[in-house]
Image (cartoon, rainbow, N blue to C red; front, side):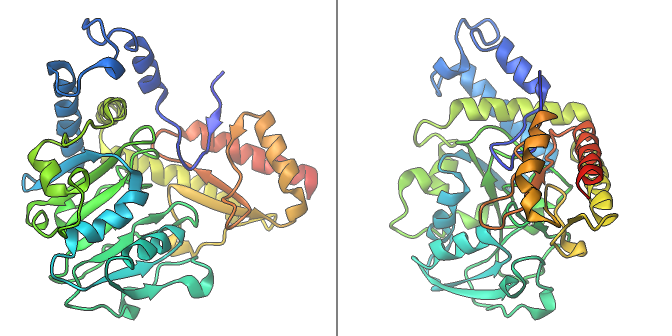
Length: 359
C-alpha cells in the first residue's frame, strides 16, 4: 500500500512516474536495455536528455539565451561553484540570509570572496523574509544570492528582489516548478532535484549566456558551466537515471496542465493546512504569515511531550516523515507537487483527531 510521504527530500514522486519507470526498467522502448545500462553518448540516452531539457524549457518558459545544465553534486556543491563560476575579477558578493541553506551558501562563498550579508532574519530565528527596504547591497557585487524557499524553516519569497544591474542568483531547490516564474529576471537558477524534480544525485542549473565567461581559473572542468554547456552537460558521465526520471516528471507535469495549474493546486493544499493550524491553539506555525512556504510547512505541538506520540500515531495512519529538522524541532509537512490534496486532507483529519484525544 502507498503511504503519504511528507519527507522534505528525497521526496515523494508521482505514482504514475514510478509505475512507468518500473515498466521500463528492464527494457526501455524496445532497446533491450535499462536506462541505467545505456551509454550516455548513445542515441537512446541522447534522446532522453534532449526530451527532458525540451520539456523543462517549455514548463518554465526558459528563453533561448539561457543554457540548461544537468550536473552532479547537489545544491551543496553548487554553493561553492556559484562563486567559482561568477566571481571573475570581483572580490565580493551579496547574500541574503533567511535560514540554514542560505547560511551554508554564505559559508562556502566565504572561501572564495568577501561576502556582504545584505540582510538577515537570524534575529527572529529565520521566521521571515527581510523586506528589501532593509537590504544593504553593494552595487559592485559580482552577484546577489538568495534562497527562494528555505526547506528547513519553511520561509518562502513571494516576491522578486530588484537588484538593478547586479546578477540575481537563486537557489530554487525546493520550490522549482511549484509556481510560475519569469526566468528572464534571473541570471542563474539552480537547485537539487530531489524535491520537485526527481531522485537525489541530479542538480539543475539554468544560466544566462553572458554568465558563462566569469569563472575563476581554479574551477574544475566538470563544474565549469561554460565547458559543460559546450558539451551538453557531458564533460563527464552525467547522472543518467536521475535525468531519465526528471524527464518523466516533466512529462507528468505537462499532463497535469503545466506549472500554472500546479501553482493553483499548491495554493489549495497549503491554504487548507495553514487554515487548520491557525484555527487552533493546540498547534502553532512559527513563520510570518506573509512569508510562509507553500512547499514546507513546519509546525509545533503546544506540548512537546506529545511529539513522540504524534509521530507514532501518524505512522499508524500511513502519514510518514513528519518529524521536523533536528535544528528546529517540531514537525514539518513537505507538500511538493507530487503530494495529492488527499494527502493533505488525511493529515488535517489526523491533526484534528489527535487534538481531540490529547487536548
